[in-house]
Image (cartoon, rainbow, N blue to C red):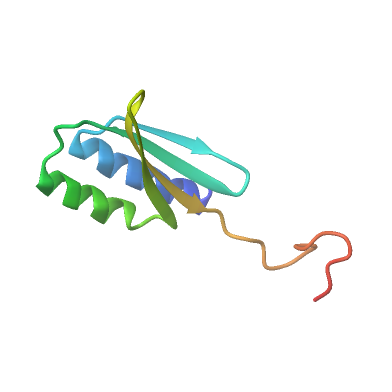
Length: 92
């Protein structure tokens, strides 16, 4: 598992420990973690949740009247330091 997957798994485990159901998904350039956030989450739990997602490269909260609140976090995969990183025509 890439380092981003390990970091994302750690974030998901900590969110699960708080009581939030989570989903982890591997993408080409990053790993995402999503968690459903109940309306009844306490202020202390919110502080803990923010401490957890601060470990990600990006995070946010999607809130809609139809689907409730979904917390998301993104952990980027590392970029290779050698080889044809920029693709054809990339000038260093």
